[in-house]
Amino acid sequence: AARDLAVKGAAVAVDASALAEVPRPELLPNADTVRPIVDEPEEGDGSEVVTSTDVLRAYAAAADLARKKGERVMLADALHESAELAFALGQVQRARELWTDAVDSCFFTLQAADYWEGLATGAEAQGGLLAAHGWRACARGVVILGRLVRHGLHNDLRARDTHARFAGALALSLLGATLAHPQRAADCAAYVPACLVPGVEIFGGAGALGGGLREAEFAASCAACATILVEGA
Image 1 (tube, rainbow, N blue to C red):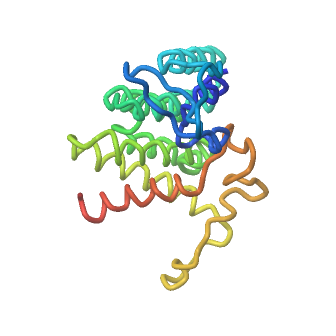
Image 2 (image 1 turned 180 degrees about the vertical axis):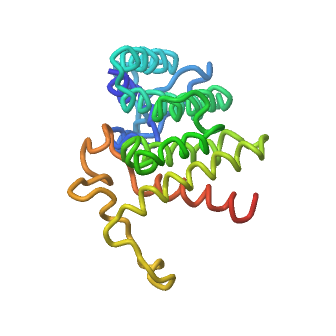
């Protein structure tokens, strides 16, 4: 329902493939409304105006329902997409809080990013992060942590480093499980992680991740976290 409302108001969540074809939103003067952009709007065309508050409330309701049902993946999606909208509206602090909650929901752990090393240590008995938490949680975790590193933690260098290292551990757990992982450094340039989970189309498949995980966002998050770890920027 929240996605339908977002589509109606043309509020595009960056990582939601279901909204990928929707026009980018136009902010109205009161900074609390979004509306579809049309090439030549006609007077009295009856276009419905949807406020950003309506969309955020719908996502909050979806998150509350997912939380009550124990659907952690759907909860993470609702929180993540809500954070994308908040960020698009300039509500950076709110976006940071929602992204952080989304990471926590992926791993059923409060402050998961801050104490990720303990989380990883606890997962070793089950075979590691991927085996303990599943590829849905790990893949979403990489994307959301990348968003935090790129857009939500500019004034906290320690937190950026911690989040980047957590994303690196998750990416390693995912890429290390592929059947065709390159063994030589020279092979990495042409490597495409096409088979993170045998028999499952993670990237680009309709509904594969409850909304899909786009290759570009996964790669961008990996690149952002790698930059922090290598350059410390």
